[in-house]
Image (cartoon, rainbow, N blue to C red; front, top):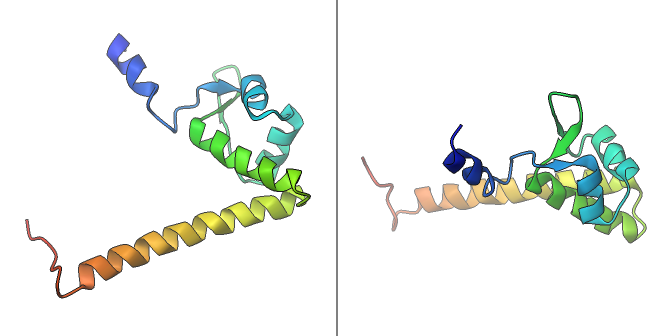
Length: 112
């Protein structure tokens, strides 16, 4: 691995760069909260060679959203389900927009 490869990871939202302790500190929450949303299958942290949980920036954004809902009084299981449904809705909307774009007669698909 070269230095350039290492720097490329700094821009990778999916690179598991943060330990559980660091992730909890960044989110202003407890490690137990991170374990709980993992048990609820909202996020699945990757594991280091030593078996320690590692979190990506993308996972931290999801965890922050869960914390926001829980701080407003939503039970953790319900918060996780809400976030999953929000994600599914966003994906469905993206697919629908793509479908509309490709099926619009005014914008025929580009042929390679």
